[in-house]
Length: 141
Figure 1: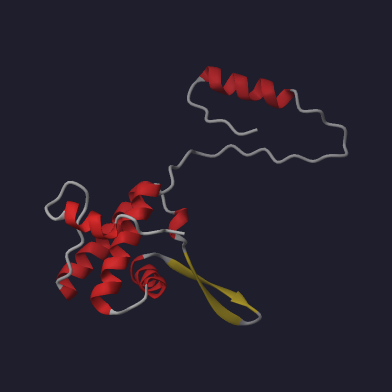
Figure 2: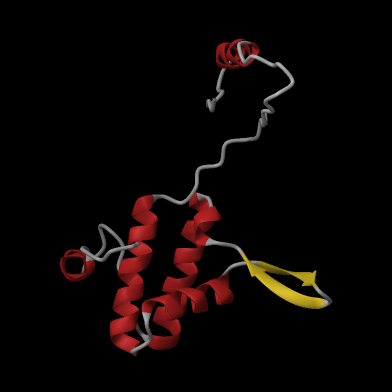
């Protein structure tokens, strides 16, 4: 059971449904209440991969390597010790919320225009229609 809770009525409905779960000591359940955080959208991810394909075409770097480069350059990371060695863990783009993903996209966009004079258009901007006609069918899987 998974439910978004916005109101007192939503909470009451959720709790009433939880009370219907049969507890017999044989099956265990996990109950978790946490704030809702919208993850990055499919449109944001699609835009990222269109940009990566353009950058790949302009620079000769492959899309997967570019994605890893930008994640290393613009996303947070931390280290954990495993068998006495430090292991770097980077956040996955799928774990970013929409605001965080927007910041990530903007960082890539600024870097590309400043360092490489590569313009990465967004919907509604000049050049978008031409860009989309060339890169809009890009697969993100």
